Length: 264
Figure 1 (cartoon, helix red, strand yellow):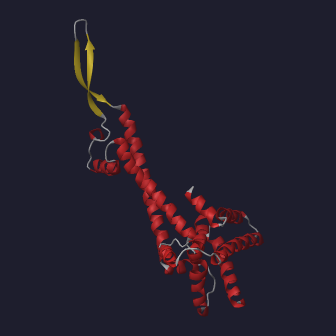
Figure 2: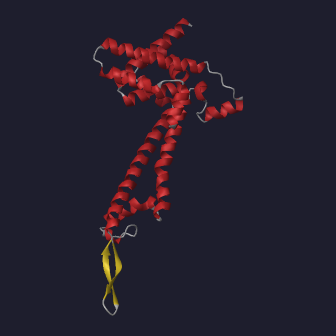
C-alpha cells in the first residue's frame, strides 16, 4: 500500500512501464519492440524533464536537509528512490519485528529459537529435551475404585507440541530468510543510490560506443538527467524483464539527451 501510494504520487505510471516491457519481451517483430521501447523512453523522459520544472516551496535549510537525506522529491531526482528505501525499511521492520512480537505471544525468546534448535541438532541433543516445546512431560492419571482413587504419575507425549514445534521452526527460518534477503537487497540499493561510480558503471554497460569526448556529457546524463530516479527506473526494468529491453531504452534516452544538448 505504501509503495503504491508513493508511485501514484510520483505522476509516473511505473506499473504501466513494466507491463509494456513484458509485452515487448513476448513480441518477436523487431519493429514492434522498438515502437514500445520508444514509448517507454518517452514516458521516462517526460517524467525526468517534468521533474526539473517542479518548483518546491521549502526553505533553503529544509531543502538542504532533504537533499542530504535523499528525500528532496522530484526536484532532486530522489522521489522514487527514497520511496523505495522507505518501503524496504518497512519490509525489514515487518520481518524482524515479528520475531519480537512472537516473543511476547509465546512467552520465550523466539528470536533465538532457530539458533537454539540448530545448536541442539549440532550437538546431537534429543528434541524432546527442548525447553521451548517439550514433547514429554509427567501426567497424573487418576484411577477410581469403589473405595478410593489412586493417582499414578506417568510420562505423557504432548502431541500438540510435536506439531507446534515444526510449525514455529518453519516460521522462524522463513522470517530469517525473508529478512536477510530484504536486508541484502536494501544494502545493494543504498550503495547504488549513494555511490555515483556504481551508477556510472551500471548504465555504461548498456550504452553503445561512448566516445572519449563524450565522457563529460555521459556524467551529466547520469548525475543531472537520470539521477537516482532515472537509474531506479532503469534497474527496475532490468530486474523485472531483461537487459536487452533496458539496452534499447537506455540508448534511446542517451541519444535523445545528446540531440537535445546539441540543439540547445
